[in-house]
Amino acid sequence: MYFPDISRLPDKVLIKANNEETSFDGAESIILNDIEVSINDGKITLTADKSEVSWVKLVWCVRMPSGCRIYADAWERGYCEFDWRGIDCERPMPWYFVVNKDDKTACYGVKTLPDSFCGFKCLKGEISLKCDTLNGKSGVILGGKTICCGEIVTKEYEGISAHKAMHDFAGVMAVNPVFPEKPVYGYNNWYYAYGKSSDEEITENAKQLARLTKGLSNRPYMVIDDCWQVKHWYKGGYNGGPWRESNADFPDMKALADKISAMDVIPGIWMRPLQNADERLKGYYTNAEEFILDPTYPEVLDFIAGDIKTLVGWGYKLIKHDFSTNDILNIWGRTMGDSPAKQAYDFHDRSLTNAQIIKNLYKTIYDAADGKALIIGCNCVGHLGTGYFQIHRSGDDTSGRSWLGTLRLGVNTLAFRAHQQNKFFFIDADCAGLTDKIDFEQNKEWLRILAYSGTPLFVSVAPTTLNEEQEKYLAEMFAVASQERELIEPVDWFSDKLPSEYIIDGKKTVFDWYK
Image (cartoon, rainbow, N blue to C red; front, top):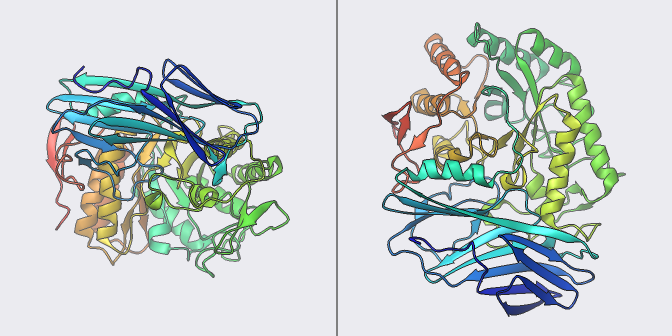
């Protein structure tokens, strides 16, 4: 083979259990006391009883081709770390990685929805896969259960672009994905309001959105972000629940959803499922003295399901849930490195891995929506979310205050994660924040690439911000975004983390990010 083969049995298997590491020669079955690791056609299963199992690592002694370039995914959102680079022995490669040389591309990964956090590492003469089975920051105690740590898949491509290869391979990895029926676009009020808004302002936003999209058969969404709940970010820096009541600036959330719907705009809403001011619920305090619900209690999941049903019952047809990776693992993806759970708290149910805990939360939210609302996962682990949300906020926050913030986090995310679009879910590279703090000529480029990208377009704009010419341009971009489009393809991404050259509708298009 031109590229290394990891579809065969590994050369070594390492297990960390009860705080001790043990190494074995590779085999289909490895037994260590009450622990058994089985490897069959790429599927890695783990069975254990009372032992605390922290991870299982597979190692292949193989060599990468000289001069190759490597792409690596991220644990959750992107934080401007996506790029192509040479072999980097310190680089974590969560979930999957891609190797390119000349016109050949090899993709290596695990299928979505594994029961562990799966991270690859690549050295000149070695590839390893570490399956992190922690519960909080301690080893999982399976109690005789068997879990699937991951299922390895690989595929080689020749004669097509690396981006097209990655788009195809995303489909190879994806298990039971769900998608919106139509392109998704509209307003989200966060990047101009930053938590300070009202029923009246949202109503004006919806009126403007309805006017700018008049005549379009595919209707837009008006997503109300953090601002509506009793204790919201603008008042004291807290942005948790309760989620079944609203503050004085939003006297009736059901009536507001009805008003938005009456304008032929689809109402959407934001929430943070694991933070709730009701301390009668079961959870724990973080180091920052925030009270976080423990999703390993069945009654907590039932309560969260009730929150989602309330929002759906009010008439919101898109629910954006946020912060759950940080709330569960006590860390942001940008600082996880090799160990996504290194700062986590321990949970009530020690028999579930962190990956299983996260999947259970996603499934609870998706099932509670019952097909009546689209789900956007923000600060969520995409590889654990296929089938549980139709849209993934795939990068960290863009900005309504700094063009560099949008450039770094929006453009990098769109270029390097667009290949997951319509394979895992829809990719939301985040909003265009149209404010007086950013030159509209710069934001025009961001609007244009999102509109033509084949991915969702969300815009944050105060109702009185735009002049007539700017409104006309935004209406044109909404018309483009409302239609099915071919997926955008970056051209200069091998040499630039913020690519400016793309294939759109079969033609090379250049964007000027530095106007």
